[in-house]
Amino acid sequence: MSHPPSSPLLELQNISLSFKGVKAITDLSFAVAPGEICALIGPNGAGKSSLLNIINGVYRPQSGLIRFDRVEQRSMRPHAAAELGIARTFQNIALFKGMSVLDNVLTGRNLKRRSSWIEQALRVGRAAGEDDRQRAAAERVIEFLRIQPWRDAIVGRLPYGLQKRVELARALAAEPRLLLLDEPMAGMNAEEKAEMSRFIVEVNREYGTTVVLIEHDIGVVMGISDHVVVLDYGRKIGDGPPGEVRRDPEVIAAYLGTRH
Amino acid sequence: MEFFFEVLIGGLLAGVMYSLVAIGFVLIYKASGVFNFAQGAMVLFAALTFVSLLERGVPFWLAFLITLTTMVALALLIERAVLRPLVNLSPITLFMATLGLSYMIEGFAQALWGAQVHGLELGISDEPLEVGGMLLSQFDLFAAGTAAALVALLALLFNKTRIGLSLRAVADDPLAALAVGIRLQRIWAVVWAVAGFVGLVAGLLWGARLGVQFSLSLVVLKALPVLIIGGFTSIGGAIAGGLIVGAAEKLAEVYLGPFVGGGIENWFPYVLAMLFLLVRPAGLFGERAIERV
Image (cartoon, rainbow over all chains, first blue to last red; front, side, top):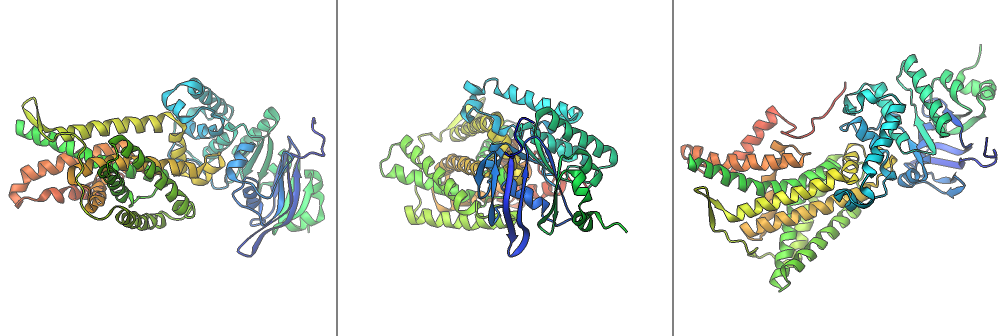
């Protein structure tokens, strides 16, 4: 690894979040090293999605600090997060359903455009050629995730598994440094899960993209992640390499089930 | 036969005037899924501001510019004071907000400029023009030309720039739009500003035709059948819907009117809209909802 382990890409410190007095996350801290795949696991309602929402600025925690690339903040803003290079997918697919696959992926390139809208309208200045470059970049992602046959299809009409892949494509189109995946394999069969796992690992290896993902399938989690963080009732109860976490008695009791 | 075409073309040209109003609705509906009831008030406010400036001796183009600036400022204000706090609430909540907004804008316009009727002269003669043996209104031809220019401008803005894609994205899923780095607030502000500009153009033409008065805000009601027929999400649909409504009401008046004692021009478009709702609820060019069960 080129980075010393002492400088994480993302670090959360003493984060607490509550909704109208109901605590969702309590005094939570963890760090994600650059280039790793970090899995967040825990029972439903443990606060995993809330955590992702804090990282990309949808929620603002009541206390704690977020450090991304050594810049410290009390909270993120969705737009600022996108500009820093944080892309994400959602648990209940949030695609632009009325648009084609290609257009969806192109929206992921939104922040890569440098020309003004006047230049774009008249196709002069920086806009000339930019359209083609953005399109080419989108096509590369589409090819990478093997969704070319559906590139012109309206997203709302595609089956669930493919929609999940299109959502990943849109996130990848932004060339993110940190990729947040909220249950990327929910509702998939074993074959689709294996394929999706391969894509995630490939993105991680090929582009060095740091990944934070939420997943319930323990087999998948143990197979692809370098680092596992276990949550239960908004608290962290485990943090370490998958092999270690798997042996942690507290984790076993709370989540994996006690052996009888 | 010549008479038929004269009625038809006269109707089509009159329909363009409806389209102008309908386009303003389409823009905002596309960006936020909200039927902006305040569009009529915006039309009125723009026309009233313009004509009042003109009456105070401000030159035409300067008055146009000042009014345009006012409309953009109004749009920014609406975005900040009304839309931003209501983000993520249901469409009916936003609709009610625009209803309130409508009366606020009307009241404000009245407080600022008074309630009397103003005549507005755009310098286009309303002498009928003879084209191929048919008598056509010069004013209507001018209005049609203006609408065509406006649509071309909007097409350029929304199809060739990333604003167009962002606009559709925001309308489709605001949360996802935020996640890919689209500035929701900016898109809304742009759309409302453009809708204000469209309202200004519509206000000038309608004001010149009917006089600038408070009933101008009721053109909203005439835009409704246009939107139902054309579809709420398509600018092309708003044009087609306007043409259909314009032509249908004039033809109905001339050919069916005598049998029922006349005066059907006023309600015929609504009957047509009802029929469309039964047969094609999304309108001619509207996006049909995709549902997977």
